[in-house]
Length: 246
Image (tube, rainbow, N blue to C red; front, side, top):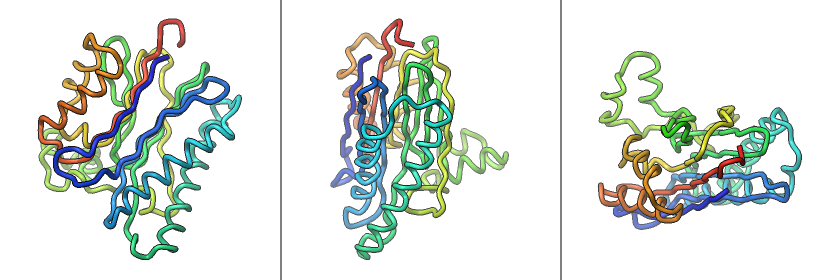
């Protein structure tokens, strides 16, 4: 197993509100997560940090020998607790009102792979040499596409394409979408929309399938997003499963 993650402020924003982590516990299970914060006065950075810090510690402390059903419940309980922590921080620090964060995560064990997401940070898997999106974006335009009111092509250029319908710190109660992923995959990629707004799926796929090591692959993705404008913070968590590990 090889993994690497990186976050970058991009070319336009003056600070980075994303947080990202990859952690392996004592049982060699992996947690990957990306959170894209929102809110003024650095509050978005705080919201994403609350989410990622809690997940990393909670995973190491409590995620041991879990069945798939228990793992789904662990994800749901963790998300609810993060939401409570963000609302409590906002209550204690009124200047942070309006803070929130997206969250996309993946848990990899020897028996199953699960993805979870809230908002528009994305989770992908590479299977049979093809990049496939696993998660579903909680955006207004995605809702309109699902309802047949917009085409996918229209959604790409829609002026409200970044309006979120769900985020941690914005909805209470909160629920997370959980996806059961096929074990027969070779790579996992999580990213904030700073990547997917600059590069389409085919462009990302070509970089992932190129002949570079894992660190250079992540750096190349971020560099390409910046070269195309870098209008937002860009975060990537990337994991390659070695042959025989699936």
